[in-house]
Image (tube, rainbow, N blue to C red; front, side, top):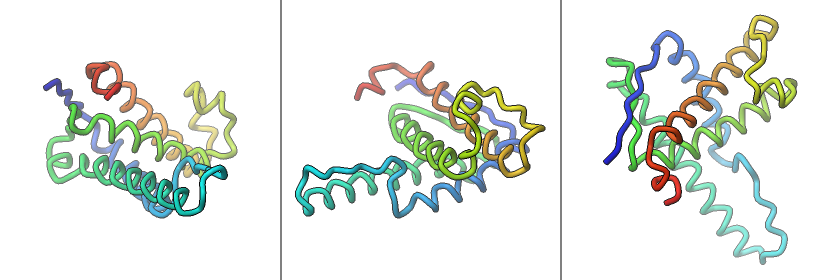
Length: 153
């Protein structure tokens, strides 16, 4: 089983975890990317959305579990076949939530180009932007270093 371990800077990542946990809490009862399934009957649509929400919540729980006591002792998180897809989906959901709320006033080209001058942002937007980039970097690491067969599932 292929596995990557990433050593993170605790002083940098620890403050971002509060923002990540808040975003996960906000997502608890709703989808990061709502599905408007008008063509389905109400019972099927409700069941489908409940399943998607359950999956999103599970992905976020699995992602947050990476930042446990061991992480705070070593600063290391590990990714493998067992958690790669969940982590990718959780990062995407949290990034969507950050874009919708904390980063809504930044243009897409600034956010996606990582070209924001953090010193020009307010404290809350700067922290959200750093969190957004952190999550994107984790996604890139997983995609680059784990076998693509894991992601094709």
